[in-house]
Length: 351
Figure 1 (cartoon, rainbow, N blue to C red):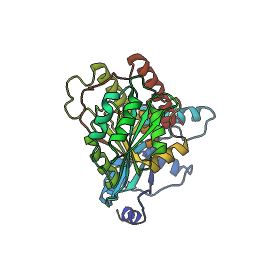
Figure 2: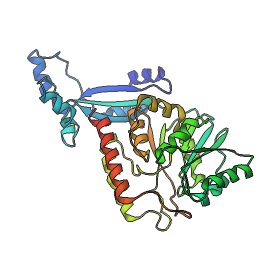
Figure 3: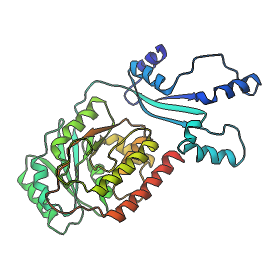
Figure 4: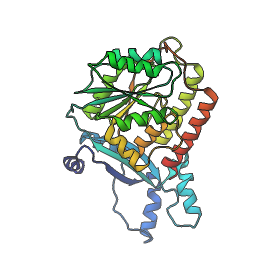
């Protein structure tokens, strides 16, 4: 406990603490090979679970971000060791038999910051939602800018944004026209041009209302989380806002992501996600995002995990779309999401 307290004193807000420990399943084997002189012997000691260590860290003001296990075959057998440790060890059930277990943690910082905000609104054929997005956008942080990224609409969305910018001259509103395709391309264009410290995604269909955004800002600026994902599966949904098939797909991905990330996310496909721009730029620089990702949800979640950011899920209301049609095609979108999931699985579990 004292060690963790001293470590906490040496930390700043971007510090990451990595703890490596052996699996109790291997205790008799390690004791035997130690007596045989095949490894450095160690004195008898109490063995601590990951939950025990997590509790001691929490008491010392340190928060666990992720946990994991690795190294199923700790001796070098050509080809076989590499196959078992890289692939088999990361599968369900086999994962629990690994020799080494680890956790990544960070200090809990309670001082609240006053930051500027950029809200990115990707829109394509959302003319009827443009003015409502601006009119309902709350004041967040010390300054807020609204960035529309228009995706070559055919219903006059671009002209509507220009009209709204002229009408709401007291608000900081910007417009960028997308050259590429897909929501993720639009979001990245907005993020790259954002001037705010905090970047937020607010989908142009407004099914997650802008009025919910301040609570995401509070999580980031208080240090409780570094990547905030909205969940539509806590509060009662409005009417038939989400088809049954979409709920099933979301539940499937939530189960897979629990294994991939080591933590529970109930709504990986919700478009509302919030993080610091500096963290986004670092993830982009490190190449953590998935190639050919059209939606961006998995890129951001996998990127945040690989960057060891503290991921927090916050419940949000989910309303029925009042204008336009959904841009998601069931079979095609589902297939693309599966491809992105397997690529993310490779980057996280099988790298």
